[in-house]
Length: 177
Length: 276
Image (cartoon, rainbow over all chains, first blue to last red; front, side):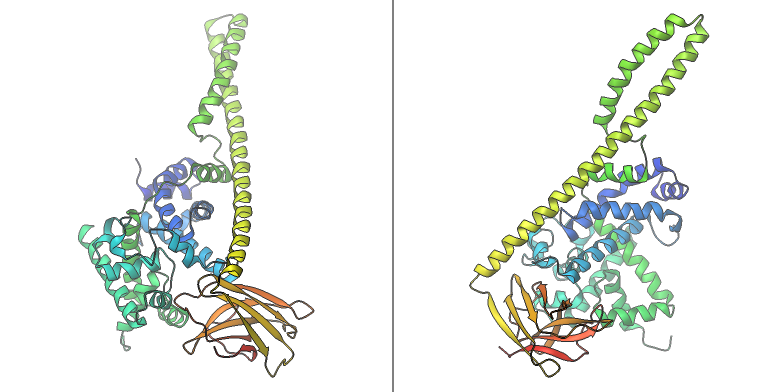
């Protein structure tokens, strides 16, 4: 099994077989994020757009600047956030994305983080109040001021928790890599 | 670095999460544009860390998404198991016929082998063509499913509108015209949990490069609540999403802003409700 970086290199040369294998290996990673950000109806469409972009943009991948996992998740998240925010801007949704997010146990802002069992892996190693702000941003697509309003916490508190949580995540992967 | 870097370290963490609000985002974008190796390094680390976090959230996507995507990039040779099984049985039937025919006309062993090779090529092409047809059908099915999803969304939206009107917490707020257009009027049907609808009339036409922006003012802070234009009769309407964390809006107001909208009001106010 070729590594992700090797598959991307071959995709850049137009190798569709490599793309298929890349998709099978990385689509679940992107889809987990998109489903949480956008819900089950829009996520498959967004997933196709993301992988279409990855296929077209494979030549721009630079392995020295990040892993294939980071390449995929940054693109997926950025495309997901674009869709989420343009949906809000167009005011097409009668109920805010926040309310949709609330229907998803993974990002339910009204449940305390500790009650959720869907959070696995590295996020689970953060203190609850840091994990909460990071999840609301990363999986709920909220900005810092939106998170502050939602949690009824001062903006400064949210900023500090986010910073501490991200530093901690950064330290965790450093120690495992 | 002459400037204290600490504030940017905090901004970088939120930038990696796309969580910065307008002013902070602009400030950090400027900082990045000026070139900061420390922040570039931090962002790369944050992205790796978030990718690791996302790893715990993996979910298999629907098979239709894969089929549609592969059809889009044109990989007819890749196929799902069902398709392969179906196409292969057709191919097998055709293949047996071909072998029988070939064996009748072939003089020698080599001739039979060559014929078999040709038949195999033909079958491969046939299989590829059939797989492409199936991929096309899958794409059309995916399109159909998408259309169905949209229709469902529309009917859900109508149900939400009915629910909004039937909710005792829904209130109707009247907005009166201010000095630039004293004759303008608007009505806002508003529910903190469900959002609402603004209907405005007798507003002046929107000048080139401008748009009307609705504001929900709560606790003295205006929050952008959407953009709208007006028709030649000065009428406009807007659906408004609930505003995160705001349960009581004190005032709704409408200003004229640059097209695309702004995060906080800069233009002349055309409509405002009385403070609640």
